[in-house]
Length: 331
Length: 90
Image (cartoon, rainbow over all chains, first blue to last red; front, side):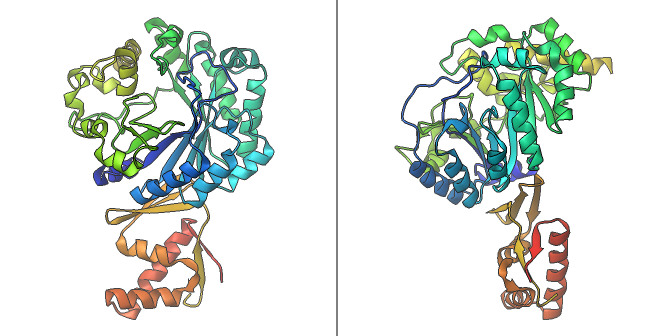
């Protein structure tokens, strides 16, 4: 996949476009960054035009997310249309609404993978994070149906204060479900810049404990050359909100335009927000001179959300890099 | 093989980017890159044209001998078949 993204960056084309098709959700996750503004969501017809434009640009992958995408009444029609227009689809969902019939439906489409979040190995813990009783059972059921229909499933564990010690059991459960296990420790502020979720973050000591529990080496970040781009946002990816707002990514909420006012082709090619990102390399950010860079995967979106500036660092990124460096030094 | 007809498998999507054809097999999560000629053959594998027709079109377009084109097309189709990207219709 890296070569694919490199080719797209060279061509100046978005390989992967994140479509936040709704901000509505049936769950109430304690760490969620999404803020539902309740505005008019893009219609099926608007998505149809958008997909035609993205096809013209050369986009290959659509990441469909939310909120919970499956609460949209026309979600089947939308996914079907994406497949018919020859896009590869990544679907991010909590799985609550995936039954056998829906899993079968997905198996007929160009689904690259389905990604779901898991917050614990037992219902009490998982449901206490999502705020909805029964969400764990629905999640497990969804994964079983998806795997039965040979759909690739990624289960991502979001490590927070209330659940990080459960990671070993979660990993075992994920493998027993024949799914891929991932984890993340980066909790960000909400889209309205509220910092409430940050209290859930692991501190330095908890991060050490977490990584010692994960045991298998945390993924090693690829060696970064400071002349490379810092990330793909605005270079080979972008995100489009349910209201048509266009951003470099779901965290870097710098408004590049709205597709109800301008075509996505024009926004992608002419927006100053995108041009500015394309003009910078790692060395142009503070990260470029940071001694922890080899142990870090800098995320300017999460930095911007928390600090109001892409040029900085956050406690969680720094602490994670510190722990990963300690682990590397131990070897 | 000349009378056989193939089609692209469902779930394989592609785009032409710069001079390359990028194929993604969504079922396997595999990414494959084809050069321009490979991409053109890929476009011609439509479930209607026979292998002989594909060879003829390439001979016309690239002014290569029929013998060379036949060898290249058959080798390419065999690779695509082995990779599970196309299937035989007839």
